Length: 81
Image (tube, rainbow, N blue to C red; front, side, top):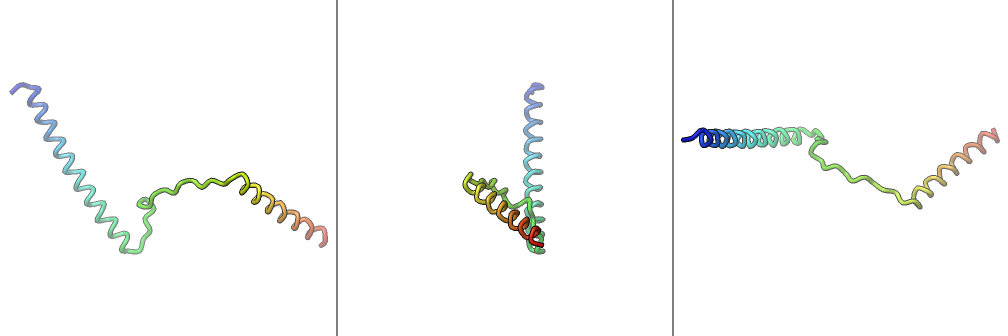
């Protein structure tokens, strides 16, 4: 065999070993996840990320006006006291 063929065979062996190792790691992770779920622990890494919530301009305006009304009410209460 030539050196290139030997190198290719060796790389294929390494790839096979790496795939086996990745599979074993996946199995270990699955076992640990099952253990943590059964213990009642919450696992944040498992839950998918929520999409960012978006407020419309009208919604932001309503919130702003409501907060300004609360502030005005507080100012009126301070003046009366």
